[in-house]
Image (cartoon, rainbow, N blue to C red):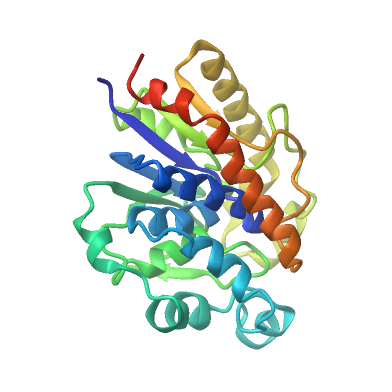
Length: 283
């Protein structure tokens, strides 16, 4: 039986679709030897591997009205739209504790994609211990313009989705030639050029490669999606994604809409679960 890896796309609050998919996986005992998550996908990957069903959904919905979680107030007072201390300290350590023991005992390797601002290239950080690698996770989910630059071992990082939104080539390089990919956009979706790219040249003047990364992001993304669709048609990739554009965007405050998207993710996975099991068994 070939090893099957898992890739989780980001997308901000659209990632609650992914939490529904992952909870369905947990309900069916589905595990993977390697998971690569991007931005919100990396965050949700951790709760999946720690086997805390419902945790990622709870975090996405329960605190949405708390100004410390996601707000202009947080952006103005801390420099981060998603409050760093609240999201990466108070929630995992006090309010909704992360199960470090289960996570650390898991045989699943978890990687978060981050963007090195100096090189303009993606890096894939092994989240082998979330007590010590929380900043690596934070870096993966730090969106430009609404997040502070994250410094790790003297290097500056931001959102992994800038350089590798769907790291299928990376997971193939790791030896996984058959993979499951959870996307937060429907089949046929293609990105257009980011209109904020010129602003990056001003705001991130000390990182001259970043504006080019943002300007060309849609090209790499669309090429990757086309490759995924081709491999899906050949039976080498199993994709779970919304059937139509989700009713929420990167930032969403409506709890009812978030619940609807979570339910859609769960049901989408449930509808394909037997097909998925056959794919993973290579039948």
